[in-house]
Length: 118
Ligand SMILES: [Zn+2]
Image (cartoon, rainbow, N blue to C red):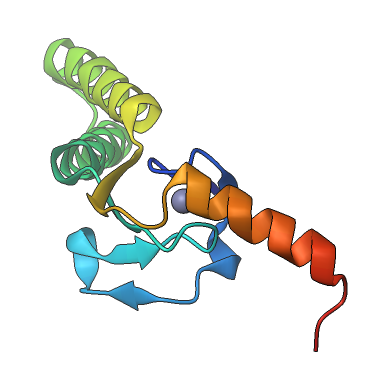
């Protein structure tokens, strides 16, 4: 899963995250590029979960009980739309800013100059 840092705008893989804190919906992760602390948007994540479970329960209801399609189908469409919309808007928000662009640039230059360290 690719994530984009809301502070330095660089993409990183979820597997390269070294530091996390908190748990559940409010888990915060540290950007491997600039050390900023990032978190998912609480309400969008919640909206996505709710949309997903309503859609799932509507499908289960439709498959096992049938009937009431006048209720099941519109609810299914609405919840899927809610899931898709919150999924597309879902992005990371900065909790604690990390290094700024100048610091990152200086670091990059330093790394280039020193070559392979360690
Ligand atoms: Zn970053």
